[in-house]
Length: 309
Image (cartoon, rainbow, N blue to C red):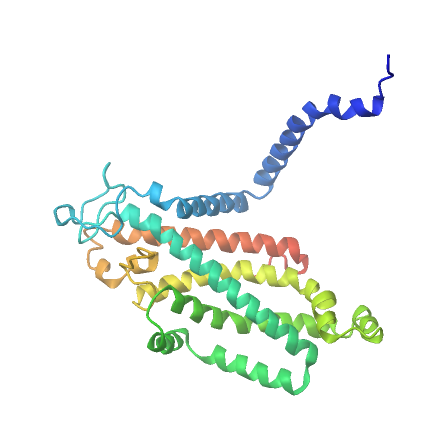
């Protein structure tokens, strides 16, 4: 009889036990995290729930968010309309559900675009310095001096009002902030020994920036992006409230939380406060969750800034 190799039997014997042990350890870590940081855990749960709602909006919404029923206008919350109906009989719950898509998409798209553009500008100008750095930073100062509302009006004159114009405006306004952040990090790293060694070995500037400097800027950039995203969502809500963002009856995106807070709904506040309370609460909870998660990420990735705003 062939002799059994004991080394081959170990994985077979331990295999069935590994999965329960791993699951138990993961569950134990999750419970410790909830007990240690209950606010962060609650905000993470809220954010995940909102993401799920945004993804599965067509299945969660109980009515067509754009279809109005004049016979059901300004009805209060009920079994048929969980959040009531608006002035033209549209289901508020369904509009709030679809509004999650707009806020999340604008927050992610504008933050991603603005962060990437700003990081590239800050990386190049911080490393090269000189006249290029001076000229680009003055341009960044000029952009930051333009009020967002004025800039959006300028973009609206070129592009049709909608998602693209909002994302472009917010991305352009985000880029200077990220550029300054990355530039400051690059200036502090430019004279470090590992950068000087790479230069002495004949490495090209592009390689030095991408391989040696860029990885050291990721932590502060990720922290800034997580905090900026909440502000981008809030800015989109404000622009839509003013009628300069997502149209209230957009055939593609359906609606926006900011558009649901439009002044026309405020005149019904005493009679039907839910028209404003539900979309306002959804926007506030989302921004709060994103900001708290960003603050938590900052404490972990950059402990020097722990507890600061």
